[in-house]
Image (cartoon, rainbow, N blue to C red; front, side, top):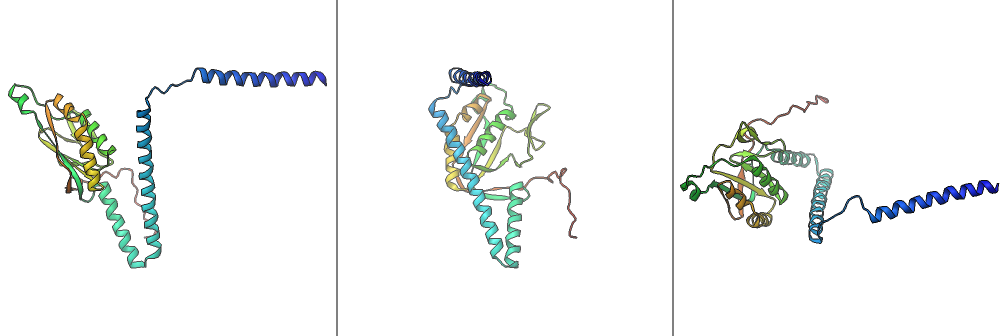
Length: 239
C-alpha cells in the first residue's frame, strides 16, 4: 500500500514538474514574438473595432427590416420586398447606383512624355492595390474606365494587357468613379488618398493620379453584360 502511494506521488510530481518546465520554457522562449510597436497594434485594434461596428450596423438594419415585415400589411410587405430586391440588384451590379463619392483621373505625365518616356496603361498590381485601399476606406461601389466592379470582377494581366471584367484597359487616360455611403465618408476617403503615396506610385509608372474632391452625387452604371450564374440553380417548388 505504501509503495503504491509512493508511486502515485512520484508520477504526480513528475507531471507537475513537467508542466512547470513547459510553462517556464514558453515564457522564456515564446514561439512567436510580436515586434510591432504600440501604434501599429492600436491601428489594427481600431480597424477591428470599425469592422465590428459595421457588422453591428448590418445586423440592426436586417432586424429593422424583419420588424417592418412583421408589422406591415400584405401590400406594404410586397413594396418592402420589392425595395429589398432592388437594393440587392444594386449591390450585385444589375442596377445603376448614385450617391456621394469622388472621381480619380489617371493620365500620362506630360513632362515625361516630352522627354520621350514610354507611357504604358496602369499596371494590374498597382490597380489592385488602389482598389483594395478604396474598399478598405469606405468605398462601396467602384467603376474603372466604364467597367463596374462586382463581387465577381477580376483585375488581371492577360497577354500583357491590364483587364477589368475581361475588358482590356488599353488607354492611359481613364477615370475611376467611387461611391461611398455618406458625403462625410467621401471626404475622409479623399483625405486618405490625398495623403497616401499613391500619387508617387503612379508617377513612378509615368502616370499622373489626380484625386478630385468629394462630390455629393456620382452615378455609376450597371454591369455591362450579363452576370455569370454558373453555380445557381432555379428552384421551381411552389409553381
